[in-house]
Amino acid sequence: MEILSQLERLSLRDKILLGYFSVGIIGILDFWTGHELSFSTFYLLPIAFTTWYLGQKSGITTSIISSLTWLLVDILSGNKYSSSLIPIWNASIRFSFFLIITLLLSSLKNAMDRERELSRTDYLTGAANSRFFYENLQIEIDRLKRYKISFTIVYVDLDDFKKLNDESGHIIGDMALSTVATYAKRHLRKTDLVARLGGDEFVFLLPGTSQKDAHIVLSKLQYGLLEEMQKNSWPITFSIGVLTCNASIFTPKDLIKMADVLMSEAKNSGKNTVRYFIC
Image (tube, rainbow, N blue to C red; front, side, top):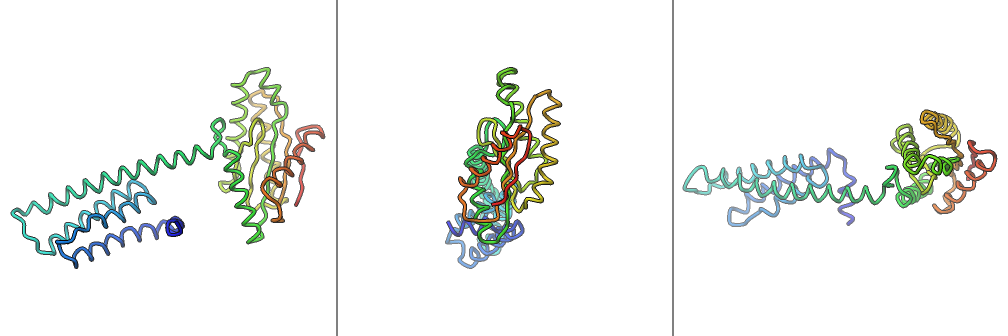
């Protein structure tokens, strides 16, 4: 598992070089050992690697290179055939075999990626779910502990959402939730995480964000969200708790509870307000 983890962390350039370099090494070993020993299984290793980590197109490219390498080894080895077309035929069959493996692996990888995406996504809004949020929050706590990099949690509650749901129906309510998630994801950084904890409550994770930075982000975000609600004539405002974390002594649940308290204070003070705190 440690090896797989290290391979995952390689840069794109290093993965490409490793895949193609492996084909060359296998070709050299294939030539040195002679035609009596089969190397077909070994050629599959770089094909599987590039398909899994670089995608189907890279896997097909590696399959072509592997087939041509094997053909070159056959020719350089001086093997005798009854027809000069036989090596080409053999290379075509090998490529077909490699291609089938590539397509199967690619389909498996895509299916696993889809399952992983579904397991961490809220089906209604497309935001992250609470499980995925807590996992990322723990990562930020660990990063704070090691590198002293602060982060900010934004806890958002939709004021009067129940009223909208009751008066306009669940379909409109679902549209409002999706609009909030979509707008937040579009206007926050790619490194930020937008998650729905359930009901009408969202939480945003802003890595490397101080309270000062959070003030700037939230003033723009809250204004934009209110505009989106007004465009649709939805009577929704936002009570927001903003917790900036500078200490790594808290658990994810502790931090969420603190952010929730801040949000409740904002809601109880008249709604559509923001409460800030540093821990």
